[in-house]
Length: 322
Image (cartoon, rainbow, N blue to C red; front, side, top):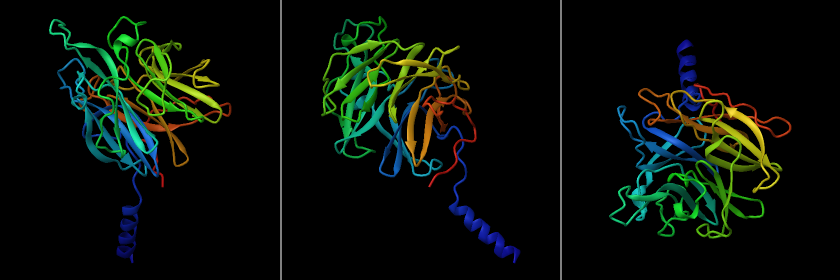
C-alpha cells in the first residue's frame, strides 16, 4: 500500500510544476526584460550580457527570446537578433521591446549607428533606435527599414551620445501608436500604422528622477509611465500616471528599491492569466554583477485607486499558473 501511494504521489508531482526561482534564467546572463503576451503564451525578449568577470564595461552582442505558459518553465529560443542584423549598426545591443501589430511582430531595439567617416575616432554616430520585423513572435527577424528609425542627430537636448536608448511602444485604445525612449530625458513620438515611420514631431520631457528605461501601459482608465530612476540611490524604479498617453504625468513615487549586485534595473510589465507581473534584472547569479545581469519576475499589485504597491523582490519567484 505504501509503495502504491508513493508511486501515485511521484506521478502527481510530475504534473505539478515547482515554484519558479529568481533569477528565472540561470544558464546565461540576461538583462532588460520585455514581456509580450500572444495568444496563450508569454514571450520574453531579453538582452544578453557576455562580459567576463574581469571586464568593467558592458558586452552585449545580441538579443534573445524565451517563452512560458505557466510562469515557471521557460523555453529558450536562443539568440534571435543581433547588432549584425542591421547593416547600419555597431556596438552593443541595448534594451529592446517587441510588440504585435496587424499580423506582424515589430522588435524595437537600441544600439549605435555606424559612422562612415574614417576620421571619426569614436567610430559611431551615437545611439540609435532600429526596428526589425517578423511574421512570428520568435522570428526570423529582419531589419524593417534598412536605417535607424531614431538617430542621435534628431534629439539634441542631451549632450552625451547614448541618449537615444531603451525604446518602448504603446498602442492606445484608438490604435494610435506611441514610441517612448531616452536616457537623461524621456521622449515620445507618434508612429504611423506601418510601425516604421514617424507621425509627429518628437516631444521631450523629464519625469522626476528619470534616468532611462521607460515602460508605458494602460490599466483601466489610467496610463502608467514606469522607469529606471535616481531614487534615493540609482537605480530604482519610479513611476508617473496620466489621463492620456501623452500626459500630463503626475509623479507617484518609488515602487522598487535597489536590486542585488547591480547598479541598474529595468522594468517590464504585463498581465497574464489573471495576474500582473513585474520583470526586472539584478546581478545575483554566481559571478554576476553590473555587467553580468539576470532577469527576475515578481507579482505586481495595485491599490484601489490604481496606484502601484511596492514591488517585493523575492528569490522564490512566482507561483505557477495554468
